Image 1: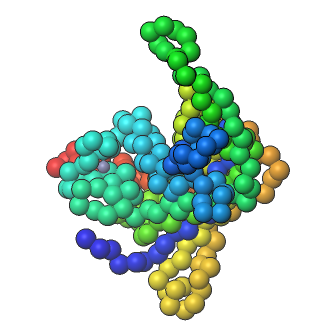
Image 2: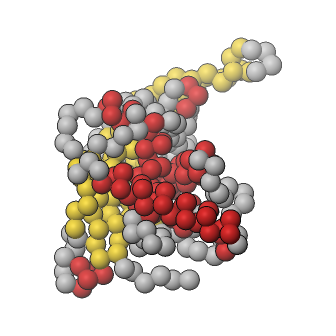
Image 3: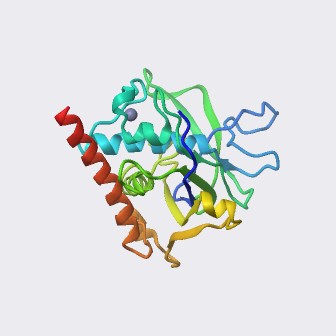
Length: 263
Ligand SMILES: [Zn+2]
């Protein structure tokens, strides 16, 4: 099924790297190269693949819905087409295409560092033979910038339900797992996802050449938003808007569950 484009939400986001981040690329095989390199573009800049972030957001949304006691699919069992959860609506289900796109996120720094690692032989409880290896990381403090788009944010009667689902998930991620990439058990890959500007562009806007659309919310500019973000809060202006979008999502989820109980 193909939906007509009614409106598109554009979210310019950042990833703030809070501890060294390793998102693996292809091993170069070159002599002297690190054993485990990070993903880089053709010009040598590290980036966060949109597919990696999308996968994390999908599983976080499932975890959040499950935590709320609501119906959600799991990666090995997608929902029945008649009873699709918001994860399916946003990321794609058995018969519905996804409506979210997550672009790769880039940084303007080529800086990476190399960390030593040791593979432990679990039986002998010591370093395995030839167990030393080197791992490339993007250092703490790096910021990546990327863009997420959501087609037709409305679900049922709820105008911004899909946007609310995403923002609720980002809040949950920032307050709980905060993890991206490899080596998380070693303390790598602590990140925060920071939406900075959210805009809506309608079909009319496109026809009439208003390609910037309408600004819905922007992040309040402050030097250090760390503590708010640690709590999962997204300090955006106007500050009640984010809660309103998340409210749309909750309203839709409640209406769905109510409807399915009656049938
Ligand atoms: Zn589902």
